[in-house]
Image (cartoon, rainbow, N blue to C red; front, top):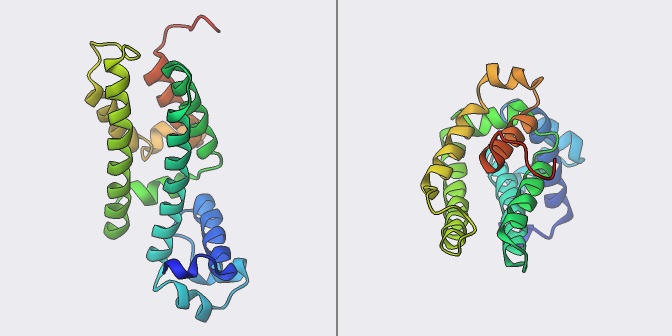
Amino acid sequence: MSDHKSNPKYKQIVETAHDLFWKFGIKRVTIEEICSESGVSKMTFYRFFPNKIELAKVVISTLFEKVEKDYKALMSRDIPFEEKIKEQVRLKFEGTVNISEAFVADVYSGWNDELKAFFNEITIRMVNMVRDDYVKAQKKGAIRKDVNIDFIFYLSNKMTEMVSDPQLIAMYNNNVQHVIMEFINMMFYGIIPRKDE
């Protein structure tokens, strides 16, 4: 499939699917809608993708590749760890702009076991990379010594469950991005006002 990545129609399908999935969720969007919006025939679609789930995997992989690239670039910068955390929060905010509740629910709820397993596999790889960086930062004194690094990631896992909770989402006017940012800000900054506020 990698030889298709440079094909303009392949790229158009992936970009269109990203936009539609992001806005309406994966489950609700049909192959017909993707073809119509991207201006390709179903025959062209099936030349590149056997089904919608395989396309969703490509979309999710593409998202994670960008996140990983941006994260590695950030972590390689010669700035204090606290600044790296602030930048991580900013990147997370930008990365979740206009994300729909439906997309989050489709990825986390287990609507499709194959897709959920794929998403979990990518997430674990990313979490392990970030965890290694946090352990290094803690050894250098950039994270409190009394913080259990694994607890940070336990909380992150709980957050993924929470973003599927309609009652919580409703507290934020059904804006999933605001829920995610509230969690991240709470985790990194707590509830005590910061000096810069």
